[in-house]
Structure formats: structure tokens, C-alpha cells
Length: 378
Image 1 (tube, rainbow, N blue to C red):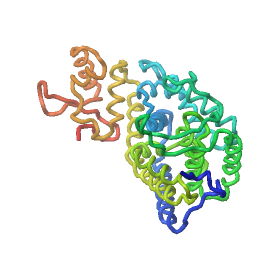
Image 2: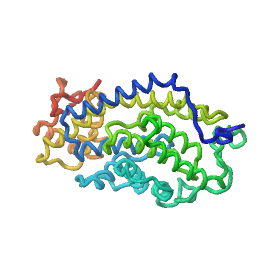
Image 3: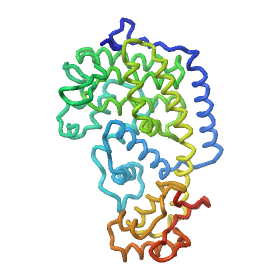
Image 4: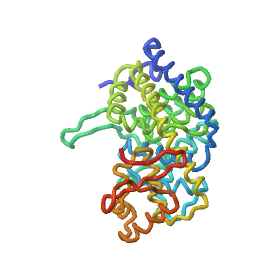
């Protein structure tokens, strides 16, 4: 099987401009509308709202590769990094903190030079113990000379999806990549550059593990450079996670034989468009959550109440199925039913919750939003 790096013209990627121009124009239109809307809202992109985007990005970019973090542990790590109240939150996750370091460095420091040592430090941050699961791996170093294959299936019936360049070629390949990254910053459309950087780095596959997360961090960095904006108002990783199966299928298809990546760029731009569309809901939720905590800045909540309120806010408008009940409160906090009832009653008295029309065991509660919306069941 021939892969794109086998081509004599590697890494001179090609694409058919006539097949992507309309998609690119649409992506640019939505991008402009989103940034304009953010500006017109006059919304103070404060630390609380910024934290929600970070939490979502960290969880989804890890989930794409089958790595799952506890959301409350992620929230704790983000709170500590952004100087937000962390009382009552779970203990931070060491591996998640490394991922957050990578995401923040890629986006906040998007105009700093991208160097070999910087990329290596990102990969090392993802694996602070030197292990990927139960497997000892090399961290902060290029992978070894053994062949690197992406496979699936049983040991005796493995299917090879992709084989990366030999390990001996990685140092030279990564120097070429960094030269391309720097040289194309001014000459290539920013969205196309982000998409090409993604498949380029994934195809080199320079590390034993963490290549996907590094590639997505570089994609976010390229987008931040394109927008000249460190704050993220959308999560491309969240959209990729939604289309995870198609993501891997299009990568596999475009990494074989030809350097023509038109199909990949079409998919990437459409994914970007969907991320723009998804942001409509996420922005409302982020603003709502920020306004809620601003309104209740002086309201005293215990740690269990804070946890439940955040769960309701995370669900979004009309997103918490069936409303909040005493039973659900107990399930989320592990307190007694009597304690749950007292906590809920207290939240109703503080005008945080409102009860529905049902009585007795059927009663449920809805979180009242400061934007005039009510978080309730669908």
C-alpha cells in the first residue's frame, strides 16, 4: 500500500480550488457573522465564560481518541488555572491538566514561534507519568525507528488503516513541517492552512501517542492566528467528536496514494461550518452561565448546590430532561433524601429554582435563568 508520504512530491499538497471555493466562502461568512455577533453583544468574555469553552474543548479532544476525563475534575483544573473559586470541586486530574496546558499555550500564545522543543513539550505534558494507559511510552521525544501503524481488529485479523513514515525520517519531516508552518502563514488562506496543518501533522505521526491531540491543538493555534484572537467562541473538537467516525474515514481515505487533499479540505471546512452553527447554542449557554453566577455572586450555596446548579446550567435551556427532582439531586450528590429536600427548598426560597405544577412525588424543579429563560425538560 502506498501512502501520501511515499509520493516523490511529498509534502506538496494539492487541491482543486473550484471544488472548495464555495464552501470556503460560506465558512468565512459564518465566521464573520459569529465574531460580529460577539462584538455587538458587548459581552464581557470573562473568566467564568472562558472556562466553559476550555472544559468542552479538553473533554472532546481527548474523547476523540478514546481518552475520557471526569468533567468535574476538568472543571477543577480549569478553575485553578483561571483563578476561579475551586472550593468544593473535585481534585484536579493530572493528565487533564497537561492537556489544558497544551490548549492554553496553543491559543493564548498563538503568535509565539512554533519550535521543535515547543511541540515536544506539548506531547510530554499530555503524559506526565510517562505512561499511556498501562503502556510505558517515550515522552517529549520523537517516536522510535519501529514502524508506526494505525490498526484495528483482533490480533490475528488486524486491519492496517495507515502506516506513518519511518521513525528515522521524523527529525527531517518535522523541520520541513515547521518551515511550511512559518512560510505559509502569510501566503495561504488561514482556514485552509489550519486544515492542511491538521492532516500534515497527523500523517507524519511524530510521537508514540498523543498525535491527534497535538494536531488539533495546532489547528486551534492556526485558527487563532487567522482570527488574531486568543479567545475561542467555538470548539472544533466538539464538532469532530460528533462526526468522529467520518473524521477517521476521511483521514484514512486521503492519506493513501495521492497528495490531492480536496476531499479532506471539503470535509474540514464543512466541519468548521457546523462548529460555527453549533456556537449559536453554546454562546447562549456560556452567557447564561456567566450572568447567573454574576447575579448570584453574593448568594451563599453549599458545595452540593453548586454542583447541581452547574449540572443544570451545563444542560442548557430546555436541556435537563424531566427537570430536577429530589431523587436526581440525591443521585448527583449522594446525600440523603432529607438533605436533598432541604437544599432544593433553600434554592426555591433564594429564587434559583421554581417548581412545576405537579405535587407530591411527581414534583420537579427548573432553574431560573437571569436571561429570562427557564432550564426545563424537553
